[in-house]
Every structure is written in C-alpha cells, then in structure tokens.
Image (cartoon, rainbow, N blue to C red; front, side, top):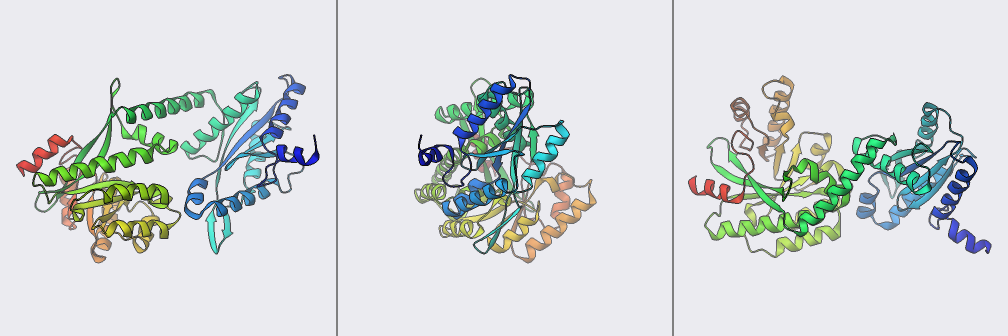
Length: 432
C-alpha cells in the first residue's frame, strides 16, 4: 500500500488525527495481545452543542472549531493515550496504561481539560465544553463493537445527567435501549396520528375572563394511554424528531384558530411554543414560516412562545426570524422568564411583547418569601418596560391573591383549568 494512500485511509483529512480504521486496528491488536487479561479503556468524547454552533455560524466555523479541539487533544500527549476522530464532533481515545479507576479518572479529566473552555474566533468568544463516556475492556465489552457502543452509551447518559464524564454501567444500557424504543414509537405515533393538541386557558386575573389558550401537544398511545410530554419531548429533542412534531403542532393549532374564527371566536388569543433551536436554523425556520404564511387568520391574536432561550447561540439570527413573524402581527412571549440571567439579557436583544413568569416561582407562593420578592420585582421590571405578564402554574387562591396584589394581568394553572381537548375548551368559549 502506498504511503499517500495509506495516509488517506488511516488519517482524518480535516484534523490530521487517526481515523476510524487506524483506531480499530489498534484496538484489535490490544485485544489479541491481552486475551481478556489486560485492561485498557476507551473514551468516547462529544463536543457539546457543536450542532448549534455549526447551524448558526456555518460549516467553516464548525470545521475550525474541530481543528482547534483536535490540536488541543493531540498536544503534549506523548504515549499516554491515542486520540482519533470518529466523525463529526465525535472523538475516541484509547488509554492502555490504566491504573485504579480513581487514577484513570484523573488522567482522563486532565485530557478533557486540554479543551480550553473559551475559543476565540471571528471577534467572538465561544464557550466550548465536552462530554465523555468511558468503557473498560474486558469488563464492559470483549469485542470492539460492544466496547465502542458502551462507551457511546455512557457518553449519551452523561449528557442526560448533566455530567462531564461517566463510566459505563449495565443499567445505562437499559435506559439507552428505552430511549431508542421511545424514539421508534414516536416515529410510529407521528405516522399514525396518535398526537393531539390540548389547550390550557389563560385568564385575565382581574376580570376572570378567558383571553386566550396555550396549545400543548399530547400523545395518546393506543396501548399505553396518555404518555407524559416530560417523557417523550426530551427524546424527541435528542433524536431531532422535535422539528417534525413542532411543525405538526403549529399547523394543527393554526388550523384550529381558523375554525374558531369561522365560528365567531375572534378574540381568543392562541399561544404556540417554538424552540429557540428552530429560530436559529434557517432551514427549519423557513419551513415554519411557510406554515404561518399559508393561513389567512388574525395574527394579532397569535402568540409565539420562545422556549429554551438559554441555548441561543446566535441572538441576531433568532431576532431576525422573530421580526419576520412580527410583521404578520404575531406577538412574541419569552417563556420561563426569571429562571436565569439569559432571560434578562434577551429582553434587550429579542423583540419580546410578553413575559411568562416561570411556575417554579409561583409554586412556592406563599411558602417562600424570597420567591414572592422575586415575583414582585419581576412584575415591577415588566411593568416599567411595558410588557404584558402571564404567570404560569397558579394552583391556589393564595397564589392568585398575591399575584393580583402585584398587578399581574394574566395567568394560567390548575386553579382555573388543566389542559383540555378542543371540544371542552370550545364549550368554555361559548359559556363565557
């Protein structure tokens, strides 16, 4: 085999690191020599949020970030470990001289820390973090495919648990299999129309009148019954099925708004949740925008609720897309307001009309004096800046009284109504 051809096969063109074939060759040699008696460790590393940086800033910037990470992982390593690029933002490392787990963890942590948390490029600073899963031979796999798969499972579970590094355990595989099965059932559920929209009324707290509804997706499984969004939404987000589901929700909710207008219910506002990830991705945004442009309805009575704003990487890009929606007359609500500094900073950068106070503050009324004080000041800020405010998660009369005493205009929660099917909420319109 020629030197040039060999280099093409065994080394990654973008980063210069060993590629998958060379990494697998090394693993195979180690396994043949050890015969299951000598331990070594495989680490599976993934750059957090790389996909969003790539989508928001382009492939050129993404490639430069991969080169930056690769250089840091490769520098000053000596013979202590081997690092290879598996593809995309995924890397594998091989640690042959492993000591007890605690010392191995120290070694792996020191390697991970080589990825400097701040990457400066294009006059901007980008926060770079990574997640690693570790599998040890032969305990966590006696063949190459099992060992790499279990290291990847550990990495995926580390992400879910908010950990930087996680060693593989058998129970992780059970959870991973559950997620795969859930993703498969999600796909089938979307194909077979198992999803529906429930609506939770939003009230004027002073008059007690319904002013709008929030559209919320519900999954009615033919065998398992109602599946909680807390179970399937995170899986949909990880598998990217959320974008297909989100477009279906928007389409169905706008279709319902049109039907309500045809029946004379013009004044009811309709809130629809849109992920910040959609706003940052031009392809997904254009598909969503196309749906909005296809309906001839009163968009002054439609509200877009932006979720997951803490994951926004390109504020300018998201703001541009929101301004395009506002030209239709749509109002913009910032969901979960008050849960972090990002919410406050986004008030300056996004074209927001409405703030939704997170239920985590409302739920502790009147038990927590601090949360009452926070709500008081959040409402004061909102009123000074002339935003409308909706309080989420109102469950008791005491919570309602305190919110009204601080001039909170709008609210929703189980004190009034839980999310309900369309036919039930329509009856509320008729009775009110």
